[in-house]
Image (cartoon, rainbow, N blue to C red; front, side, top):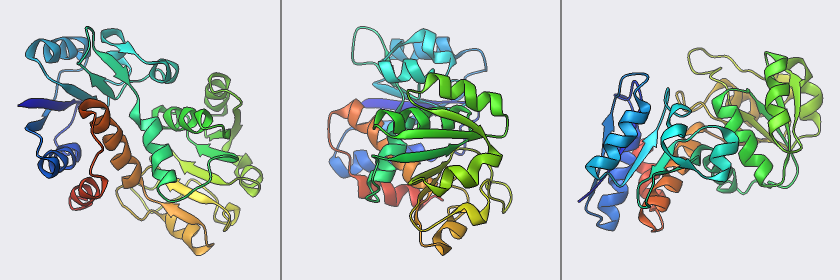
Length: 265
């Protein structure tokens, strides 16, 4: 039996186990997905222990996505993002990957969104960084808007062709944009949106990385303008799908994983 898992702190409410185990059951794979909660500062030891115990793969969540970089060989995208959320133990040395970036791209593609033009990413933290790199890798021109303007400029300096802005620039930026991604936690704990309502329009595709609640204020207001809306569970789903396919070499049963995920939300 293969064992896969997740390291983070905390991890007790993770939605990854039911999503991955539903995929194993569907495809008849003899595997289990378990969670581990190392002490902060013990990321490297946790990765070494997983390798010693023969785990087939690990997902990584807060607060370890940056810390595990020293314990793995990151691929080019993960190295540029500066964060790893998926580790593969199939080689001589654990390799690190960032499926958050690909998860955002695949979530938009699943909704037939054109990824060839202009995108606005709100937030310059870990999620914003992954999304910005993911969209830029697809060839999109990315504008990053953040409450702390310097953080937006710093991230834009790392992302090819990106530009950094304050939140006050959102109306102008969105007037000509095709894709909007909220990569902040705004909307999770209160009914609030990081984007002015009058800046939204029907030609946008709007992805909100927040998945609890599923229908955030941003998505509700975007839908009222006729925009295409993509809830955060799609990004969570596809980062898991990408990890599953990397680990197993098999096409993921996306519909089965999606039902398992949404059944726990």
